[in-house]
Amino acid sequence: MKPPGTITGESVCAVIVTYHPSEPMLGLIPNVLKQAEGLVVVDNASNPAEVALLRKAQQSANFQLIENEKNLGIAEALNQGIRWAKGQGFGWVVLFDQDSQITDGFIEQMFSAWKASPGHERVGSIHSRHIVPETGQEAWVARTSDGSPVLPMTAGSMMPTWIFDRIGWFASEYFIDVVDWEYGLRTRAAGYLVVDAKQAILLHKPGAPAEIKVLGHIFRPSHHNATRRYYLTRNRIAFYKKYFSTFPRWILSSAYHQFFKETIMCLIAEEDRARKFRSILLGSWDGIIGKMEPREL
Image 1 (tube, rainbow, N blue to C red):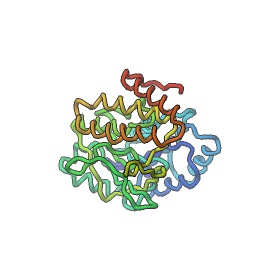
Image 2 (image 1 turned 90 degrees about the vertical axis):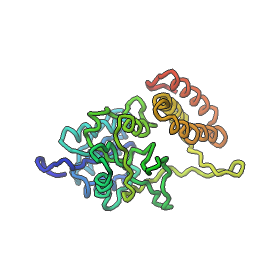
Image 3 (image 1 turned 120 degrees about the horizontal axis):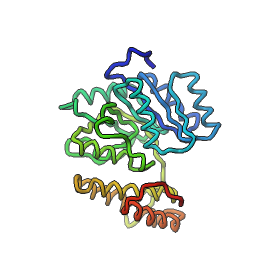
Image 4 (image 1 turned 180 degrees about the horizontal axis):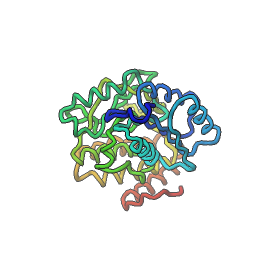
């Protein structure tokens, strides 16, 4: 990290959230430090052996480590890291999860996209492309007519720290799912721009569900467990309710492609369907009535 006094308005602090990280995953840390002026790692209650790996990495690299005693969720962990970066005077944060890998020139390319954007002083977030390293395929993201992402992913995004003073923090009540979508539409609803950095590539390895073929169509069930299925359902419904009046076309598209079709595939092709169906019903009800507290399942 740069020493105090050299941080400028374009200085970037990376924020990485970890949860049960493995040693190979920690290879992200030195790669990020080659490009960012600062780094804060926020761990969400990993086990002692995994935390020991993080402490060991901290000894050989200069970064801040925040250790949570319980899992606070991705949203609050990001908020913790961003608060630390703001407190240190950084003008920008770039967000990663432990399953991603930064490519050469990543942050420089993010800034290039920002500077090239008309009205760049109103840019609230910049988003990279996500490439699966084994296949070279790009993760699909819904986009507007100008190519900017509608529902961007948190990993690989870069934001000016002033945006959090203007529109608030990530929604901690969402805990894990739909956190990125909610902040993306909140940014747009407030009149700020969401920019696509086409040259900035994040290598990101998602889960690899097996393909199935139904009525001539190929589907890839996510195979999330029953607890995750609850939060996916609850948070999506809460998100749809919040933004339908402002972005009806985008919400209807998401409800069909990311919610309806995925739920049907879950109930047709996945294991433990009875428990997952119960989670979907509970999540639907809680999303409708606005119950956003943690639920024992």
